[in-house]
Length: 501
Image (tube, rainbow, N blue to C red; front, side):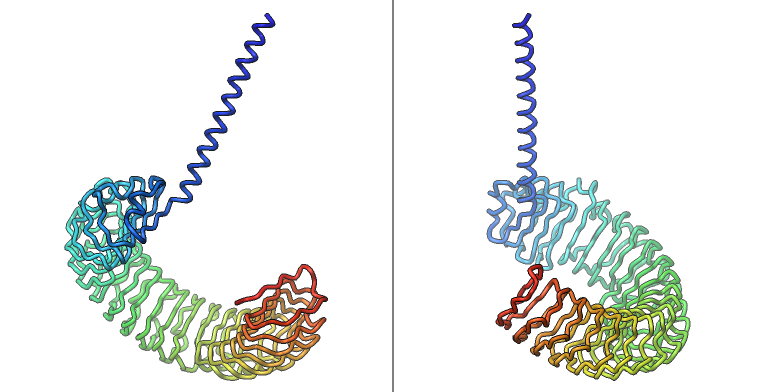
């Protein structure tokens, strides 16, 4: 009986041992394969196709980038099964044959240098119709026929395509279509009702040709056609006009669903009352825009407004809506012209005028001066709500007492600032201070506020750091490449000191 029990216990121990061994072996194998996958999931072929042909772990690859101009030989065997992303970059320009691309590929990209014609149905395997295919065809310019494109293609980029499109050629589930050089009229039914994002051409767009599913529309560089009322679909949210667009925007031509509107470089037309829908929240004018905006022309829900470099018109009181929170522009501002709702103000490259007390709104939290600003900051000209202040490249003025508000936490000087900062000038609320490239002045005792945690000096700073000049609150101190001074011995151990090269 005892002998039988011993045999039973031995059998159980042996089973337990092999069970533990097997589990440990399986865990080790899983970890090994996981490591090999992470190390080899992307293969870049940039020297020779042999990098791919004889890669010891090619079966783990899911993304392959080919940059060499060598054929895929042996045909149908070079790209491993399991590859999901296949990108042919600028260096590749060899004929692709049927069967070269495995049925697992879902993202396929050819560069603009690929010049060989090919039959899409042969190159893209039929089984890809069961997959979501991202297809980039930069140089493709063959007439597309019904059935050429995979049925499940969701993203289609045709960089050089300039052939007429017929109804039912584009897949029924297509979401994003980029036709950057396409320049043919669109007829009704060409664009499927699934499209949400579209980039097109320089042709008149007829009412009814754009699908109601469209939410983002970008016109190409050369588009310069009028957009009559009823042309744009009612669900459109984002509209971007190209560089050369310079047509009057007629009232009711933009749908009430629109939230973001961008005019590009050449646009310089009067914005009339009723031209912009009340749904608009973000409006950007391009470089050339320089028209007076009449009060009431900007919609009441606008939160972000950006003017281009050439805009130099006076903004009259009540022109900017009370909903506005972010504004970018370059020229003169009149007292009372900026709404109290404004929290972020960025002056453009040309702005260079004294900011008088009472000009900036009381709720402003972020203020950025542009490249050319170089004026004295007057006491009490910056609101007490301000927390972040950035000076541009040219600013090089002495800071006056009471010129910076006590609410300020972050202060950044531009490259040309090189003035002595006197004690009592910087507010105690300041936690982050950055000096620019040319700053090279001694930091006097009592200059830096007691709450400062981060201090950054620029490239040229190379002054002795006086004992006691750095506050105990400081946690991060950064010097530029020129700094070679001995630091005082009273610096705290927890202070992180680093050097930018």
